[in-house]
Length: 621
Image 1 (cartoon, rainbow, N blue to C red):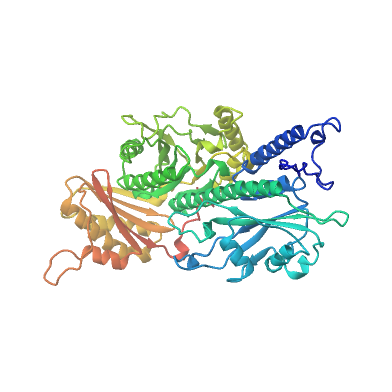
Image 2 (image 1 turned 180 degrees about the vertical axis):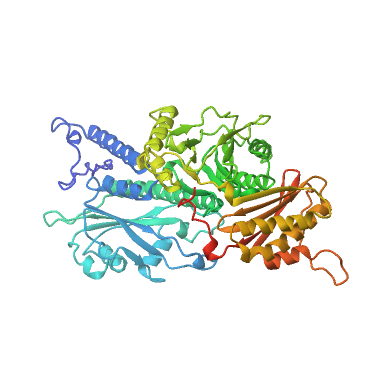
């Protein structure tokens, strides 16, 4: 689009070229049309062009879309060809205060030409023509016409950018215009002598006009100013998009670093999870999931969603997840965990931080699950017959962070063959339908599934929402309940008396022989005796002893004293203090945790290969 510049005093208005003629409206309705009318129409058309171009260039936060829009705006309205090069970020090792890492440009768009497609990435030679031009480029270079003195001064730079052979394909008389794509200068950076920040130049725009009928092409001052204005707009738009992309990647990395990379695989339950970020415009969310092993072979299942999409949401999510792990380790009931999370959310700062959460505890020995909800989507319980049920009658409560909320728990049967799916609202929300429709679609999809493995549940759930409709983050946690059969569990209450350690030793030995684990009997009896002796010394109520046979043999001794034992080296003259040292040496693993108002001390031993029970999900359960 080559409009007319205003006429100068004493000179007639410039005549537009035939290669880039002005719109018909510039010609008026007859030869007697006034120059003033033509100039006004030219200015109106140019402003309309700039308005349309500005909207297109600023329409996206994707750098590739911005570059494509810039090239399409310029060709063929202002030039026959356009090439857009973007600067690649410098490596971290080269970002010292006094260092100038090599400038690297990549061709992102070539419109109307094949120039530069053979070498899309160019590293500017230190102090070479391209490097010098980019570091001091604060204004348009050119316009210059090949074959003229000005054009020859640009030839070394263009040869470095495109190669001498490719440059030879440009016809003599072609007009070239090189324009910087300026970004926002970094804070604290010193400007160069040209008044520009070389690091703030995000790229380079090259415009080409070809000669017509042997007449050299040219860019007049109005064309140059228009192109420079659009290049500035595009540079700022690309810079904004690149900063947005970097911030989104940082936020996404932050969120993913706060989520578990893998889940534990406790006995009696199989777990699977999925996390899918939402669309790019939604930024990072605050969805999280977790599975926390608890005493007694139980496991806590958690899914939550911090409201909002920002770095703050991701940071609050990390703090709430850590708090949930700590509270779960205290073996509090699910509704008590939510109550303390609510208090914690109110202490995170002056701003209000709200989150929804479902907290469930599964007991594979009792085949029961206890669930509490804080304003979250209702979990889906899949029964052994394949029927899926949304736990919508579960007291939902208010979101975490509201304050003063009385949460409650509900206990449900979870027989072997059943499963539970926890999910965030991104799975069932859609701008064109109510959440109830999404929940019903999920229920039907899970009911129609032929298999209810945790992996299959996650896959089936995600099929209700096509990828293009996923506006929000999605977090899924699926648990398939296998349970631990009653014949693999032995449990006793023992009075805290002096003869109790001996009785515990005999009971453990009988159970191991019944299970065909005679090879483990001697070590197990010795460790049971030591742990029960310690428990009897501190207990005022009956001591509990439990043996559980899964892929390992687990022994748990509980008492009503909250003081956790510590391993220490006993001196030769000490009468006590050798029990835990002995357990640590004989067991494959041991530990202690608080349970209610007391504690549980446990140890595990690997089973002999022939004595191992079937793998979870196969055979038994």
